[in-house]
Length: 159
Image (cartoon, rainbow, N blue to C red; front, side, top):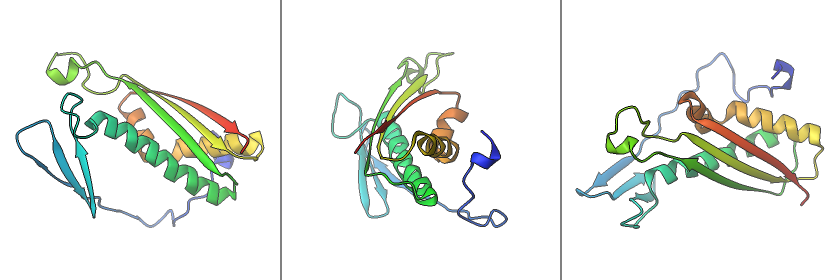
C-alpha cells in the first residue's frame, strides 16, 4: 500500500497517546468467568456449560467490534457514506493445543471474515476504506502478528 493511500493520522503523530484498558474478573473454580469492563458485565464459559460465550468466541467478537469502530473512524475521515456493516467471523482452532499437546498452537490457525458494507460509494473509495481499515485495526493486527492466517472478503452492497 502506498503512503498516499493511507489516511492522515487523526492525532499528533509526534505525541504519544497512550491508554490503559482495565478488566477485572472472578472465576469460582469452574470454566465460567465473570468480567467487569467499566460498568459492563461480560461472561465467558465453555460450550458444555453454556452460561456465556467461549473466550475464543469473545476474541472473534472483539475482532468484529474493532472492525466496526475502525470502519466508522476511517469513513468519517474520508467522508465516506455508508448505512450499515454486516460482519461474520469464523475461526479454526485445534483444541489439542489448549489441552497441552506439544507442537499444537492453542489459538486460531485461521480466521475468515466476511464484511459487507452498505454504501453507494465508488469501488475506488471503497477499496481505499478497506485498505485503511486493515492497516489500522488493532485486533486484526494482533491476529496477524500471531501468525493467524486472516482472510477477509469485503463486499460493497447497495443500501
